[in-house]
Length: 282
Image 1 (cartoon, rainbow, N blue to C red):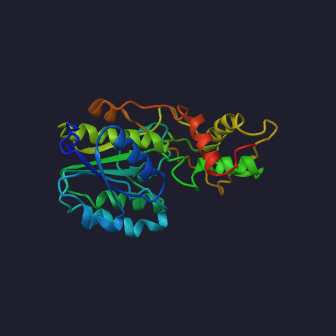
Image 2: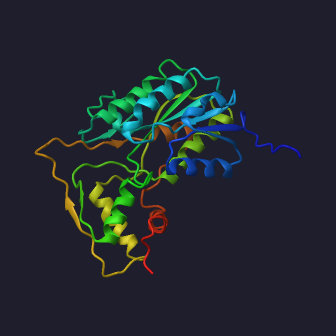
Image 3: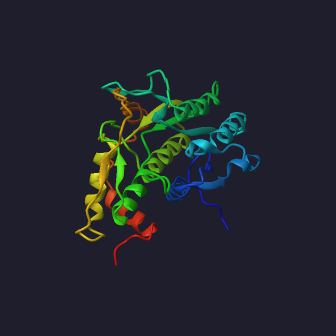
């Protein structure tokens, strides 16, 4: 049987998995555009095919798994691959400025999770064939992510405390996969552009604003008499604004990748998560 000629050089992308919804979204998107796929757990790096493009999603996990992720990043930095696309986070910034954070902004994380994200980036220091994609806050990557928590609380009638002061530009798993795979396509088509790039939705919001929009969509699948029970998250007396909204113009200008609104496709994502949580109305 003849092999499929995708025109990509290389035509293989290895996904270093996160163990959550991101893995499946990346795999589906890569298959759709014709890449050959090698999906590897962080413990299977010795099986990495030489010369592949690597999408490293391993850092997109719970913070308690970060020590192992740091080892993965250090090991990957010496791997015989064509190019590494490392998925990172807005959390490398401490936030609080009333402006959009671009790629030239010095990273200065104050939280332990942010420090871990930055340490993962630093593990690739000096690597030439590296693209770091920093994403806004992920809303649907796992059962404990914001979208699932909102829907679970909404359908079960449980109150949920949410922040109504800190803004960000959220990203769905589907949109993250779109951006990461589009970057891989550019690299496999001859682009030789390394560096750090930011991606988030075109419009920013707080967690409370996001929740209200989700509930509005969920009403179409659940009892219309059901009311959301949201309370404002106590800030412990902290007055400092920690909003982080990413500037994404560089990714558009270099790779031609356009931003999307987090509202785009939200109804479908709500429906899928209601089904997944076994909470859809009869």
